[in-house]
Length: 171
Length: 299
Image (tube, rainbow over the protein chains, first blue to last red):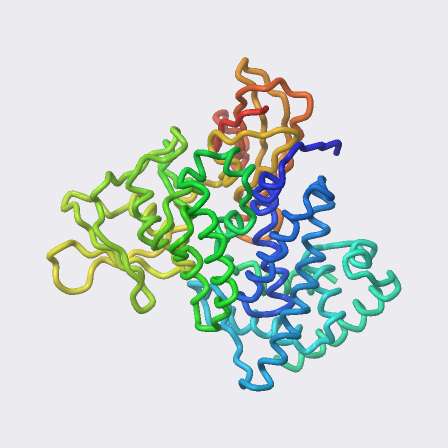
């Protein structure tokens, strides 16, 4: 598509927010689990993309930058949390929206997926989230994480194998 | 490999993040913005500077793990001048449509309830509740409680769903809404959300009257069957069109999103329309369609 929007940084922020806020917060939840932390991480990524808009000037590049920022900041947030948790015993945040129907079952199933993701090494979790939640290609994931396509492939296959095993144990 | 795709979507697609646009605007505010958007930052630069400072503090201290906490605190930032609320209004077809409206900052439940007692932005919709219909709203133990002030207010049918959907969106919880008439003792009438009253297709963005140059991202919700969109100029011709499909699978209303290329269009007013086609009864000569429209300006 030959889009050449003439957005200012403020307009870009609003358009990107409208289009991607939800999905990026949800991506961050897959990475950090806690919804409040995910919102903060994503908000920081939007502030960063606003500051860089004069260099990006393109919605696709801006989205790639946002994804990268969310992944990197999620990683920092987890590092920070690891330090905090050495002092305070781990608490798991509940999911945000208990459904009206068979709420307990649904919540359990969702929590199991997020718990299992948490057990994975960080890179594997990142690769799986980008691949299966955002449906990115191997090349896009390699770009976002700054690793080779071969590494993406191996993280994806090891990560999905471990995740399946963890989820089967759960049942 | 679809199982992981489905599992991940199932795990997080129910999460409705808090709206942080107001905070983002405050954190990224610049002098150009103040000049470009006098209607938005009417309060002036002093308030802006304070908002930015307080918003940063709020972000740092907002790490609570308390259940549901994050739903309610974001719009409470006392220094922000406005917030967005999802407000549901009635269409001519007696179905509900959703608008995202900018309102003064404050308690999100109260702000949302106030919003639907005012006329909607889109002239195609209306509200069943004039100002003064309700006097209060609060969160109880798993319920949203509304005080009905107007003894004539009819809190039944589609109209009452306007209140239910709007307040559930503001609370970030799908809790039942309890309607209590003023002066009445004992429990009020409990109402839950009825999915049948939502219009099969709706536009969340653009908002009515938005201006664009270059391109426009439109999004909303649609039933699994999808819908068609078009952009029509003031003179009457269709200048762009396409199809809208849900971006995730599943039952009920799903999100859709399209990018509309506006390059080469004459500046002026256009109508963006999304419509579903009912093909469920072949042989029927009349089509039942649902539509939602927005007027936009191309610069």
